[in-house]
Amino acid sequence: MSVSGSLYDLWLRPFVEFAFMRRALAACCALSLSSSPIGVFLTLRRMSLVGDATAHAVLPGVALGFICAGPSILAMSLGGFVAGLVVAGLAGLATRFTVLREDASFAASYLIALAVGVLLVSVHGTQVDLMHMLFGSVLAIDRRGCLLVAGAATVTLLCLAIGYRALVVESFDPLFLQANGYGSGLFHMIFITLVVINLVSGFQALGTLMAVGLMMLPAAAARSWAEDLPDLLAVAGIIGVVSAYVGLVMSYRWDLPSGPAIVLTAGMIYAASSLFAPNGFVSTHLRQARLSET
Image 1 (tube, rainbow, N blue to C red):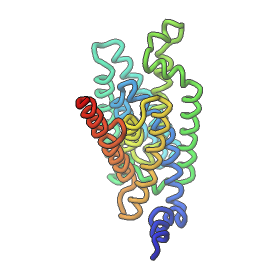
Image 2 (image 1 turned 30 degrees about the vertical axis):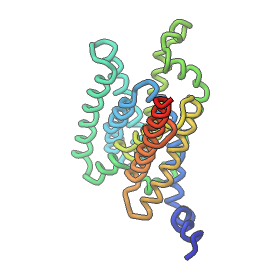
Image 3 (image 1 turned 60 degrees about the vertical axis):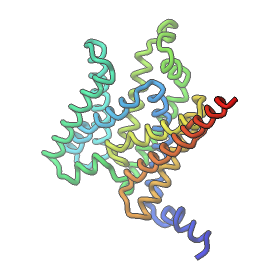
Image 4 (image 1 turned 45 degrees about the vertical axis):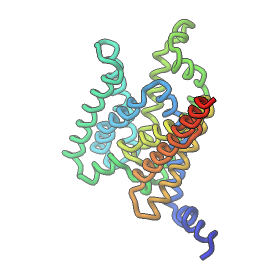
């Protein structure tokens, strides 16, 4: 077999021959292009763990949607969206009216929400239902699921384009917005809503536990490659798409769970970037060594 034939069999054949692989790739690419920029803003705001907390918070809403309407994408997505906003709102109220900081209030809220969600699914569903909600199955995504992810990606990218300047200012200097008559709380809630939208759109593909991986790992890896915000957003999106593609190929080639394979690929890119990227450990250490010699 020729080299070109081997490369075709490895990298292209699964997507050419199987429609479910094409749907999975389309959904993961759309999710990567929308959630990775959200992850960049989360890291800039030092809210990385808030994304993880919100991902767990959607589970009780997804479970209620499943109990009320069965395996309906619309019902579970709507339930997860409402649950994510409710938990985020309650965490915000706890931060404002108690001595708890935002990270502590989110941690307490998501632990309660996660326990409620697991309890609901365990009582009214089966272990298979619980595993599907926690870890997802991107290879089983259908046309409706693809449209949901594409719609969420479109809304997210439009909102980021329209409110880019305000989000940047609110991330670095929220007092500036307040001094100019704009409520920073409004932009913060819009941003949290975008976080919830992306996590809800990604839960059926990667599950509630893995969806945040495609949001945060490309964003974290991008910090080792770029410094300017537009470059960070672009690099994070590229890393997300590459992670999705390579992860799906690994999943098909070695019969691995697709969601963990995608997140693990993103994790390996993050580890390699942290070591060998221009702003990684090795490059930084070499620059410091050359400066010390001079």
